[in-house]
Image 1 (spheres, one colour):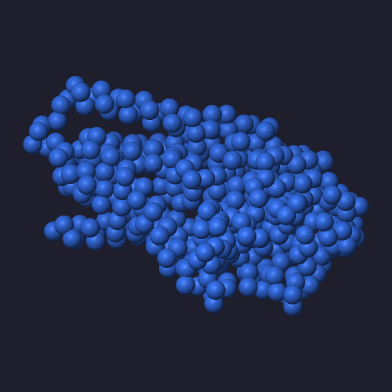
Image 2 (tube, one colour):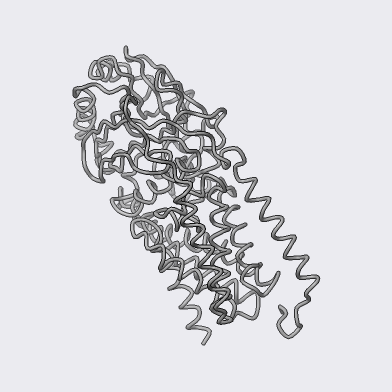
Length: 495
């Protein structure tokens, strides 16, 4: 019955979401992916296939991104009413992109490989259109497995394309009850798995490597800017910074200092005294001619400003409001925004010089979600440096998914990552995406961790998403050529 198929698509989307952190049930999620392609095979028309894809996407994004409710509860009296609209609207919109992929794929050709190609293209487009939102890409289902190592070669969109191609192959095996096709698909999976093990770099030798101190104050978002709590959180970070023995670098989280940069000199003096000659990197806000910036700065041993970076990839509806004047009429303002139109974007990816430790590519919160931003660095850094305030995301799925994506950025570049989060999870990640050591969610503390050495540049760091785009173009051309040489029986053609 059609209604049961639609309900099945919605439920399968929710099952597919279980492949994301914190569940990481990748095998179950891949099964759901195969099942929805089998389900789409039953749809005789593009419109029906589009509905199947949309419902699958809605189920997926509703569950995988349920953490989006958390920011609206920080000031529940003012913004709590927006929460269900935000989640449902986001799920419906992102699910709509998947619906387009299913409908277009079914229109181009009735087989699942056509849907897989269109889906992979839509996922690539999702990373760029309307400033992009590549959270929870299909290929991320492999994040806890050795297959994730292929990110270093073909990137996240290449892994997504391979994943969808594999699911299409298995759906054909199920639909046609073809054992040879199933064995071929499982053989391909084994190559991905064991090949991933084979290309995984060995554990880094951390002897004689510099030590980084991760400072995690654990300031809940509803208390972070409360005047009664600000001194406590600031002094907590100062106390952690002052502990002996001294590391080679101290890193605080996003917006860790309560002052604007122009008024922060007294705070910097206190921090420098606690650091006792150790350079410090921290997050702070700054104002320039009425414009506000979400910034990262490094302080030299005397507490003077050494480097400055302004976040350039801002969160829409969080750090800035598209069509701000229009939304202001309905009293809808950015959740984390300063002033009427929110933050101002910086100039783009930049490197900061950390002296003996080398050069770092700073990433403030959301920026670590974008592989193309990391690839957009003006030169190859020695490390990735993410500071974030994941208190906005709650204490469960949001921070863990954010960490999982940060690990993939390290794999893609074969660079170590320093990651410091206000409420956790703070970690040092090696170039293979392994967590060297970490501070858990919801705990105040500090951790001294040796920083792994960077490895050689990867294929993905050289080609970016152009390789995946090129493969998709060739695949679409091949599909059209095959379609011309093998006309579809009118009985099975699209209406």
